[in-house]
Image 1 (spheres, rainbow, N blue to C red):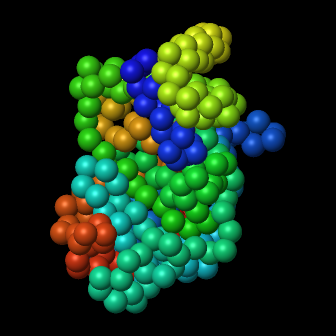
Image 2: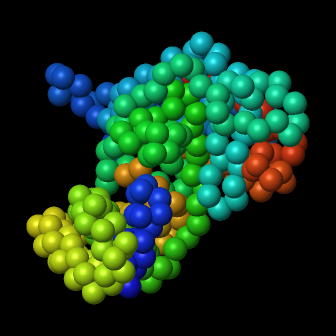
Length: 281
């Protein structure tokens, strides 16, 4: 970690830092989960929406009923990762046209229900812009993705867990270093490497002390079970809102993730969403 920190101090100068059941209603009764059918040119996918993410649930239902998704494409497909759709600009888009920036004029506040809902295989999640322009992690008003992911070994999952904890420590260190930029610049100009190393050690100790008062990140038994059996994308947990999951049609999702794509990850042959409709029981 210490060897990495001195690199971070240098970068500061160069860059300036950069599944559970249905929910209950107010009367304590269990609400029935909404199911929707996504009819695609590759086959049908049935999803359910979580009641614990009501803003995303209601918005998805609204867009489906308005026909917003009808005729749109799965415009970004990455094997062993996810398939993404919902860009209004993808309707009738000529081949080769870069897609993924279209929206409906609004975003949805993040609704993280973590670790109850996570990025296991088949998770339905909201796409969003990056943290640099979207620090609140608000979701796109229309774009979504379905997780395919990959299966992890227990050892690789444990290694990822440790990396996440190191990243959290590094984030705290970055925040502390930001407060000492003038001092860092001064020592850099003077070529005071000993001073930089001493400051680095002091800030790292402060960061470790701050982190000592917080629980370490650990995957839950449910996450570990899912990620080491059916698979998923654990590095997205807590970063993007998971608001539903696939009930039927993962074979269709897999069919889509295997299509040939161009350099922008757009399928060379369009995979079209013909219609999204609410399933009435």
